[in-house]
Length: 452
Ligand SMILES: Cc1cc2nc3c(=O)[nH]c(=O)nc-3n(C[C@H](O)[C@H](O)[C@H](O)COP(=O)(O)OP(=O)(O)OC[C@H]3O[C@@H](n4cnc5c(N)ncnc54)[C@H](O)[C@@H]3O)c2cc1C
Image 1 (tube, protein in one colour):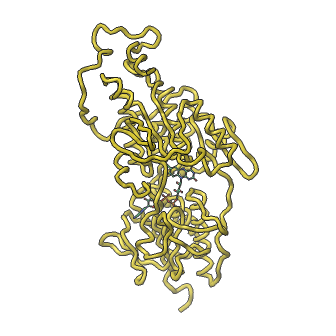
Image 2: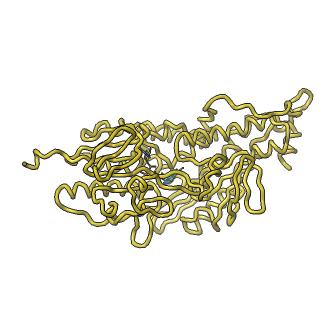
């Protein structure tokens, strides 16, 4: 049979995150049929999820339909399905009752939160990995202020207005800064019985510094920016319990209404589907060409893979996933042509994290930036990497608007009516005869209570 008469090879990509989409797009001109399988119908830009949780952006601003992204790619089809296993012998992806055959398989199914074996903490310490997580957290944060407004008991009110973020990597730092700014700026003038500026935001980190993967000078700059926003930082402090009422840090108890988990992730179950060797975080140990040992037709990339650059395990970040996706496409194209590619090498172009709406830290090679210039770079890079012109435009305008006005455009409490809380009678400060303070319009009684 001539090569032109042979059936085209089928490449199935599971996961349309950073890694999977990058692989699919890089195969656009390859003589293969690409099938992208995802349990969601959209690609999510996770680095900006915290802004959805902090009411800065709406979910649609950071997500794009997978079908629309691949609309013009004639060799690509999309299947909306949750993959539940792989039959590696028969070369089929299992999604419930459906079987999807492949010649090459790319597993790019990402990661989820991990609680270091304390899964019971998940009910209380809320992670952000999905849009639903972010909108649920937004609801929780905004409801805390609403409930505090009508709460009579000053101790309970203080608990409601205490927010603890666990883990001071980029997500934790960004989340703590965003909550502090929401309380101190966007909500500051909107309540009558409480002063949102008195909300307490704590960032707890077991290690010795915030942003541990950045160099010490940038960690220090980030710490100072957080302190300027009023975030209390506890370094070298491990969380020993999380429950409905708050968090325990060894001998110290902090009563808090909202706990945010930004301390650890665990890979998707792809390793279990394959019966492959995994590291402690459940990531599949892949070879230098990102294939599973003994299975040259199966690639695992992104947060689901444990890949190494020399001695160094590669971090679970978007650029690693994207570069791996592009590499896998090149490897497949080379193999179809009877060749091979050199082992995967990661090119580190730098890292960034933002603190609030006008400060960031950035490291590019030897260049170190902090403060506003770093924030401009951070903003430009994130807008650039967002998918879709609409999203880029909307996010840029939202940031400009919030920069100029401190407003947060998406302060929506979604997800149903507020559940009834066991609530005593209206607080004295809201009852007739209690004069609001002349300076702020809020009750003096409350200002005193919050200052305690
Ligand atoms: C809050 C947050 C902030 C972050 N900030 C940054 C940052 O600032 N910079 C940075 O570089 N990285 C950041 N990251 C990490 C970055 O987002 C990940 O490293 C990157 O998304 C990994 O890409 P991936 O393709 O491996 O997986 P993902 O992008 O997570 O994509 C996985 C895809 O697989 C799909 N999927 C999963 N399981 C199944 C299944 N069983 N069946 C079908 N489909 C499935 C999912 O729906 C998803 O679309 C952040 C992550 C989070 C959560």
